[in-house]
Length: 214
Image (cartoon, rainbow, N blue to C red; front, side, top):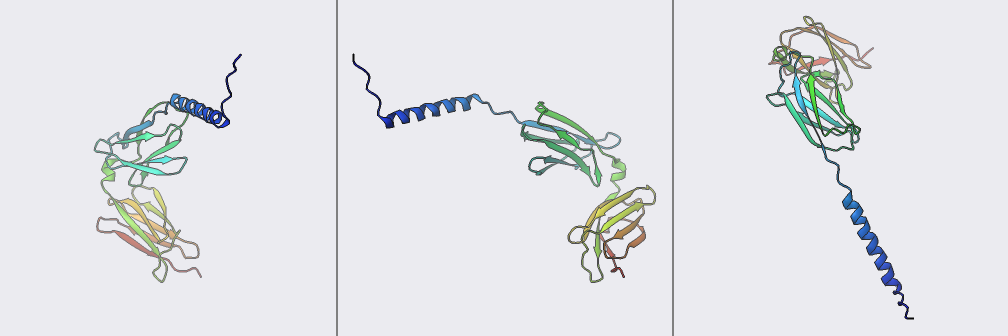
């Protein structure tokens, strides 16, 4: 009886590799890519009026990368192409008014999420706000980083806080219809108090000099 001749060793190995490659390709082809997610919504004020030019931050909680969208005239924003395998966090901001944080979980199978951010501000009041810069300096005129600011309105009794950056700068949105007291503090310096400050559109920045503590 004639027996089939064995394949040469090299041909046998090549045949096995080819079969495994075809098998792997078939397995990969059977795995469909997960569809991306979509996050959209609207930002409104306390009276449910849409806020345009509000900023919405989308934070990738895996890489900590922040993406931003600015709301349109209807107060709407949109983030597309979100990975279903990454957790995200959203937060809205208008001037210095932050909304509560919302999240998108990898365990949430919904491909479309709609959000409604209600910020603690009224547009009528926000229209009177201006961005004021604060420069905290030492006796040589150098900016003091890490200085803390406490700014309290005399009409609407609320205190806003801020910390200066590496150049001694910070910025806050304040109402031109109010007066404020300012307290500036920094380690190694005497506390500086300014009893009354009236913001206006003509004031871009305020210098606050601090003396070294004795």
